[in-house]
Image 1 (cartoon, rainbow, N blue to C red):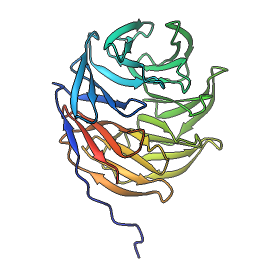
Image 2: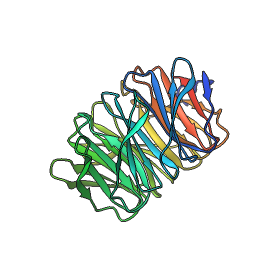
Image 3: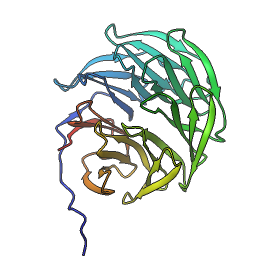
Image 4: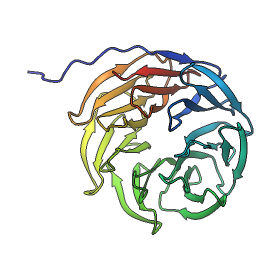
Length: 302
């Protein structure tokens, strides 16, 4: 007998439009009042979450913007672009405060450390860089992947960095020692995204093979493979309480999973093209999704 609970049906609470090309990344500010998005149209937009409207368009990148991330205090936004640069923006002033150069190809992913002092960036030049945010300079270049870096994420305590690559692997790095401590293999295609659970004990990875894997960080082994998507899975994110995992797929759907039960609890189906990024609001009540259909959608999580 099938004991898996039936999936819930949900509709978006808002659709945010304004970008003129695919939207590749979405991130909530730490206080949950603002949403940032990066797009193929070379711009970054800031949105008021309560009012569901664009409050600023940040220009300066000369090519598409692949990734956006707020600093832990919410004052700074980092963006990575196909113009090979990273930009830091003053969120309140809505202007660029620094351009970080050094990567020799597109910057695909950006992530702040929990203390906000370090920025990690991944690139199509196969490297990861760690930057001193205050000094605006590279403090380390991490090499070991043999293909494009797709995603970077710090552990909640900031001691470990996870990276994923088109070389079909994910790696764990000791941040202080700048060295690889584990290489996680098992996916059959590019590993598109990595995300730590809030307690840091589990890592989620998604792949071009259509699966999501959950890894025990301490044991460096897969504890679950979540299947059901029929195409590539581009993005994963844990809810703030760690009970739910969201992922977005090339087939235009988003799935929500019960982490403990390892089963899907909802499939969200309002996007008309591939879903590029997913992010939970800090209170866990809203999920934001971006898509190559040029839109961002906000969904209730309950």
